[in-house]
Amino acid sequence: MMKAAVFVEPGRIELTDKPIPDVGPNDALVRITTTTICGTDVHILKGEYPVARGLTIGHEPVGVIEKLGSAVTGYEEGQRVIAGAICPNFNSYAAQDGNPSQDGSYLVPSGRCGCHGYKATAGWRFGNMIDGTQAEYVLVPDAQANLAPVPDGLTDEQVLMCPDIMSTGFKGAENANIKIGDTVVVFAQGPIGLCATAGARMLGATTVIAVDGNDHRLGISKKMGADITLNFKTCDVVDEVMRLTGGRGADSAIEALGTQATFESALRVLKPGGTLSSLGVYSTDLTIPVSAFAAGLGDHRINTALCPGGKERMRRLLAVVESGRVDLGVLVTHHYKLDDIVAAYDLFSHQRDGVLKVAIKPA
Image (cartoon, rainbow, N blue to C red; front, side, top):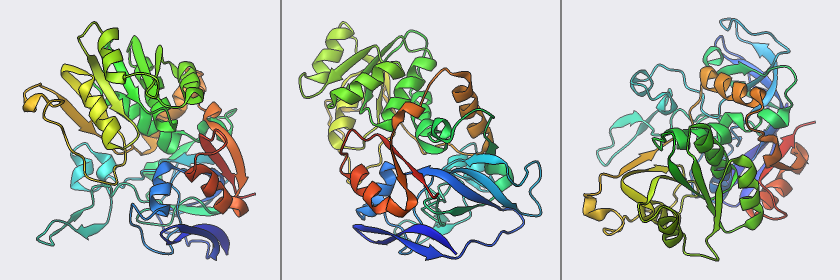
């Protein structure tokens, strides 16, 4: 048996005992050494994103291979690894059409007709479709495609952001169509927004404007690559971006919170032909104001993303960390034992004590 944090009902995630999973031929059993809590887990806790009762939550694993399936080659038991929050099998139509994040083996009813198709988040299996990582062990499906070795010398905390937060934030920058010399505005400087800020700088933006209402987070965004920080509580962000760009508007904006207000502001700061890269998880319907959207005539692009996964994506992110070009270990502000995960959820969901990310360790 093993300890695992499971969804009980809206407002309740509790620690319980579960059987250690059996390993199939294409699987790997990974003993978790460090995991964390994501904002999406909080949406699950609140009942804003539906999952099955009794499901183990969590999707950001760092650990050691405990047991390998008979068909998995190129890895060794005892090897330190990560796996992406998105663990595709690369078999679906979506994956083979170049969107592996939308992969998965699960057919679900969709649309008014009740027809079956792949769920739009089907590549996200941990803590969504199958038991996740806030446990002593996790079963990694399609391990050949999803396990990535951790380079020697890197700590769990240094690579903890790779499975989700770093991959998502960097995808936000990649989806923003950034060119050398661009001005990019990143709305919200939580962990994903901070990674988007770092990604925008790495892709060639020469003016990165970070927006948040928390001066401490804005200070961290400077370390991540922001050139200018704006506190929306003390200025009109849209007016200030227009002033800073001489009235041209930003080349792109990245929305990393998931609210109507940030989405609308991200749209309003864009130049004609600019790109809005949306990373937020939205729990209510969005409205696009006609004026901000130029009545549909502004040549704007709105791109959405689900965190890219797979071993090649993880290899690239680990290479960035190993190079020293970005230090995401600074985002880990708190440490909890798995036994105390309910308290960790309380801290993280209420954003107390300057929390950014919490490292959860089973032992």
